[in-house]
Image (cartoon, rainbow, N blue to C red; front, side, top):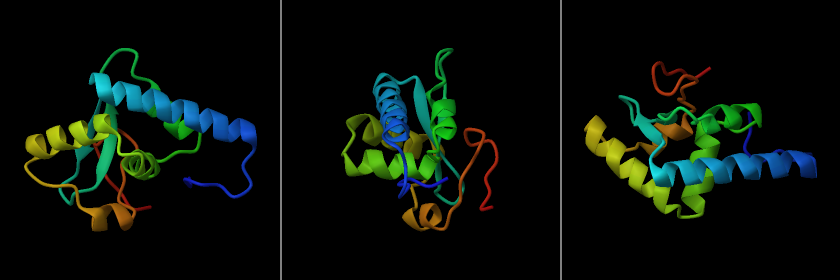
Length: 115
């Protein structure tokens, strides 16, 4: 999955934007959380019953790292708050090198890989 597909259709871009906006709102209201791995990589974890925004991301071709970068670029207050909370909970900071190396989770932070 890539963040910015070169030859995407307008429909695909619209679906990605809708899923990203939904996740941003869910981060702001606390129904989706950020999880930090032991190396500092991040993943998003749905916490509420209606928290299918995380599944929407994968279905629309967006990986956690892509969403993180897009929300970080937009200076999302919900993301900043969720990261601060996750850093306190995990006892470590987000590590940009771990994120850049491709470490990710497909299951909300239960397991991590670089495949």
